[in-house]
Length: 447
Image 1 (tube, helix red, strand yellow):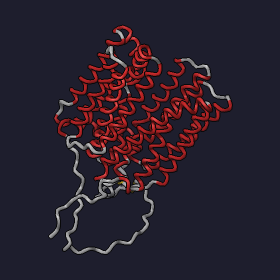
Image 2 (image 1 turned 180 degrees about the vertical axis):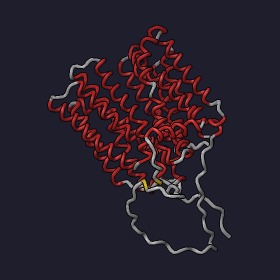
Image 3 (image 1 turned 120 degrees about the vertical axis):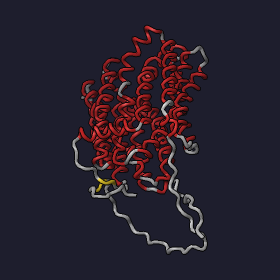
Image 4 (image 1 turned 90 degrees about the vertical axis):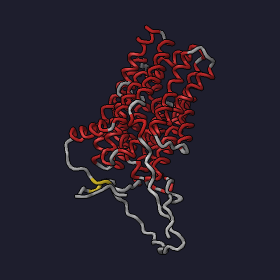
């Protein structure tokens, strides 16, 4: 008699997979460096005599090229080797950041030059973005995917907290050039991680045009109601909240509680992210989007707390709840996409997710000043909280959002004592494999 199938003891652990460990190391390093550079770049612009407008242009150059490049990066990630795109992006980022570091160290840097290099770095970051998310299912068994998603996001958020702190410390001790030089070294280390990483191959897609592949990705997004509804919800979220975090929030909190209070607020936000990540390691709701989207409503707590006449600890609690709810949603959102989208379209769908989420953020940053001045800052914070909570409630209306279920991992049969036991296999060395192989009739993604 054979026992009922159960999960193998290590089936849900991603740690046994070398490609996952290499992916985690590389992505964590990239997150660390991406948090150091904005701090160093902002202070570099100001030290060169740049104005707030100049700084805005440098930041906008990065954001613009990041958004423009992301869609095409999604096509490339579904057409070519994802690991090759990731290592190429990290290696080129190392070179571009080294150029900036040397120019700042030798005194030849200028604000226009930093704007151009910022735009280049935005494009390089975008090239790897969709692939680094789409490659996750190729690094772990299906049973380990939920844990892998949670761990990757937890490591990323932790690295960003450290990076923001490290960026300011490096600039204050050694100058912005050295800080960006550290990011160049971090990018080089990430490139090494992606170089030694090998994953199971996917069948190469049939030849097609770039625009045709982009259109196929868009059709895949609109084929799933839950997908495009929540992308639109993210668009609304970033339209209204981007201006709160970038403009109105710092003004209000520093005016009432002092400059240090805004730093504490952002720290509480990041602690909320990390706490949410820890919770998702154990909390596995069957209706992942119903639960995740319900937690997303907590993001309204931060702007609402800033709008009310409350003590600082309430504002900090609101920031914590914002990060906590957003992280629980984000983990379930990433998992929903990875479990329900075909592997050969994953990078394009993640690209549309990223662009749909952030494309309206620059507009929100531009409009928030005049709108808040006309309505009053407190009133605009209340409006923002209401829009964030209301859009979340509306996103729960479609049945596909409420009903999408977490996929159960495949079961591994456990033999009974009466079953014959096969001799242990030898331990052959598996040669490195690319993550793309030529497509043929009947090809399926490799296990």
